[in-house]
Length: 464
Image 1 (cartoon, rainbow, N blue to C red):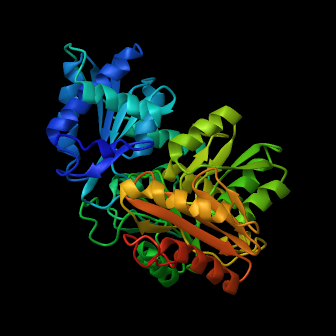
Image 2: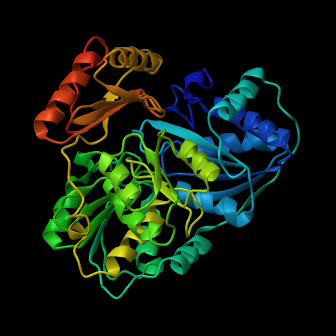
C-alpha cells in the first residue's frame, strides 16, 4: 500500500511510518498536490520538514513528485510549522507542504498542505485525495531552490516583542522536538532573556525524555520540578512542531490553554473592545464568562487549527485559541498559531507587572475539571460512538447538548465533552463542574455510556 486512504484527515494527513505512509506513495502525493496547485494557477510550492527520522525521506519523495508536475519547489529546510507559515507570508508563496506529525508518537509522520491564506482542510483535502487516487497528474519539469527564512523570522519576533523592565527567570522545555533547534535564538536573541534554563532542546525523534505534547500532565513533570527548584517565574513547553504552548506558573501549577487565554484576552480586549471571541468547545465556562464580562461577543466553535483560522477570517476576529495550546493572534501578528510568539506575548505581559504569574489569574474561579483526555478508539468507530452518545443525551429532557463539535453536555452543575479527534484514532474528552462531587458524577456518567463499547478501555480522567 502506497498511502493508506485513512491518513487524509480533516485538516492534515497523518499516519504510521512505513505502514500507512511509504515513500512511493509520498511521491504520488507530491504529484497529486502539484496537480492540485496548478489547477488553481499556482506554480510554486514551499516545502518544510520537521526533525522526525522519516522526514528527510519523505522530503525527497514529495519533492520528486512535485518536480514531475512542473512545480517550482522552495525547500526551507528543517523548521517548525510556524516558521513554515511565516515563510509563506514572507516569500508570498501560497502553495506549501509541511512534513510533520506534530504531537503524534514517534512512529507517526504526516503532511500539512497549504493553499491561499492557510492550510487546506475538509473537502479540499479530499480533493487532493481524489486526484491522488485518479492517477491523473500534470506532467512537467520543475526546479528546486533553497531558502533560509529563519534569520528574518527571528528578526521579526524581535521587532514585535519588547519586554518590560522586569527581569524574568524562565525555564523552557522543547521536549526534544523541532523547536529545540531555535529555542535559544528566540529566547536570548529575539526576546533578550538572560540565562534561561533549557530542557531537552536537542531534537531527537525518539523523544527519550517525554512526549512533546504540553497538554498531557505527565509530560510537564520535569518542567514543574525545574521551575520549583530554580525559583523560576514560569516554565514554558513546546510541542513537537512548535505551534502549541504549555505554561507552568512559579508555584508549579499548569496553566491550561483556556486559563492562559484569559491573560491574553485581557490585554487584547483593552485595545479591541467588543470583538468576537471564538471559544473552542473544550474550554472552561470561566473563559466564556470572562470574555463576556470584558465586553467581547463569545461563541462556541469546533476544535481544529484550520477550522478556527477560517472562522477567525470570517468574523475578522483578533484572537482566539484552543485548550490544546494553539494560540492565534491577529491583533499584532499574522493570525496563525506560533508557540514562540505566544510565549513572547506572555513574557511581555509578565515583564510589565511585579505580580507573580499565579496572582494574575487569582480572581478567576478555578473550577474542578479534568485535563484534555484522549481515549483510544479505532478511527472507523469514532463517529458511531459519538452518534450513539449524542442520541442518548439528547433524549434526556433534563440536559442541554451543544453539538457544534461532538457533544458538550450541559449538566445541572457542570458540563462534559466527547468528540472525535481529527488527528488520532482517539476520542477527546473533558469535563468541568462546580464541585469535585459533581465532576465525579459527570465523568462517571460519560464513562458509563462509553463502557458499552468493548474496544474502549478504562479512562484516566487525570490525563496521566
